[in-house]
Length: 424
Ligand code: GDP
Image (cartoon, rainbow, N blue to C red):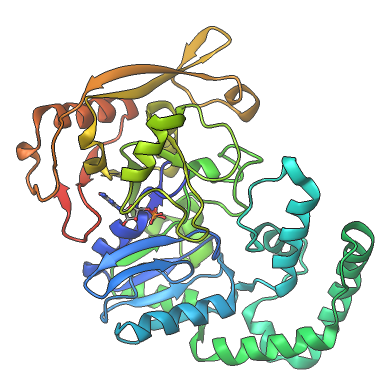
């Protein structure tokens, strides 16, 4: 059985925690899109970890962790991540890297930086991990698959062609030092050494696993609103964040994905530029940021402060719909326990008309939030295991949101730990 764990919002919903929790009963966990640009924070008995490339199942010794073909693979970053968890006492994880995954090249990271510098105040707020240049090259058919590292003659020949083109841009657009093929070849040989022990035909492995009725988790990065087609284009990421893409980015039939668990945070946060209708500012935002997540709402990869907002029913309803949600996991609810009253965005006012349908970007820019204010529950809900034991106003908040988004909230996360979960 294949399940997907994906985000309804702008990312950072707590997917890592939910995947880590579900991984206990899974055999295989797969990353199928994105790269080392975002991260998951996971707290467990080994300590606190920020994972960027490895799936959130690496802490169990019964699981196989897979980097699918859809991922932007930063090989040194993967290698360092494996070392850092092993150093903290986690048993060496079983890892497979798809032979069809493409490699983030050192120049992708440079191009990401140079382009953001060139754009100045119009920049995308990229994490500068090379993701956009990577996916541009992939679809321009000048990317490098992991398998290509193993044929030196062909690799060098292709690299010469690609570098010739890159150097024109480096010299004439960015006025930066040009690339040298021999230096890149040396780096790629090092990459080959690092990745060689893990390379596999992942889709064949998964085909077998499905036949053997293994439990397989697809772990998404970011959330619906960062999808290049269905998100807030152009302030999006460069690979699809939807569960549907899991079939492609892992190499399995689409009809095998039976459960889609969409993670939805009890308030909003976002990183990078782009419209964010329910955003709040000043002291109100500072307090939520400081109390949010586990130790504050700061990027797991970059450490930058996240933009904060109240729960957005319009964005989340759309976010759940585009994922094909079967279950909503409602997370970080415990954080809201300090509030007397909790505003919830229930509609967007666009040129005087209120809508609950998430609009295209140019209309989104004009949308003003319509808030409804719910009473807070003023208390600590951590440690509670049964839905009925939650304070009445807390249940009212959950049920109000469930009704507005139209998808069943079957899991409620009331703390960062694996066991902090209420099933409904
Ligand atoms: P992801 O990228 O979707 O996995 O999300 P992040 O890892 O960026 O953000 C989730 C943060 O919230 C992490 O620091 C988690 O440890 C923490 N977290 C997850 N679920 C809960 C929860 O229910 N309550 C609290 N307080 N923190 C949580």
